[in-house]
Length: 158
Image (cartoon, rainbow, N blue to C red; front, side):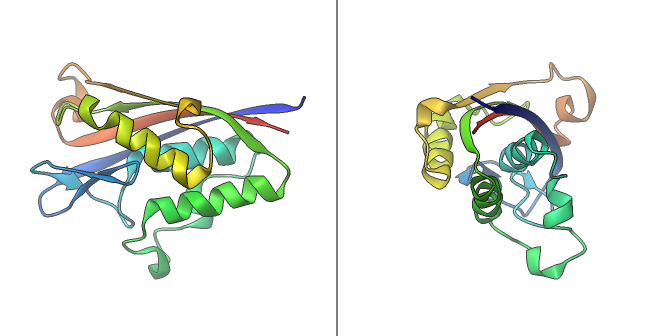
C-alpha cells in the first residue's frame, strides 16, 4: 500500500459582523472569522494537509484571495474540489486528525456535527476524522481572542 501524509495550518482574525464557521457548521458567537472566503480555518487546514500530502501546494495556489470568484466562498465547496483533485490522482483519505485552538466559544458541543459534516462532504466515515479543541491558555493572539487557529494532518492511501 502506498501512503502519503500531509499537514496543514490556518489562522484567521476574529471580528464583529461575521459568522463563525468551522467545518461548515455555523457556531453561535459574538465574533466571526475574517477572510476572503467564509474563513473556515478548520476546513482550510484540512485542505492544506490534503494538498501537502501530494506536494500540490496550498489552497492559496488554487483559490487565491486576489481572485474575486472566491470572495465569500463556502469552504466546503472548496474542500470538495480538493478532494476531487486527490481522487483523480488515485488517492483516498485514510484519516484526518485536527486541532482547533480557540479561547472561546467552547467547541466540544459542536464537534460531532463538525465531524459529520466533513465526513458527508468527503464521503468517508465520521470515525476517520478526529477533531480536538483546545485553548492557547490566554497566550499569544489566539489566547487574547484575536483569532482562531487550526492544525490538521491527513493520511492518504493509494
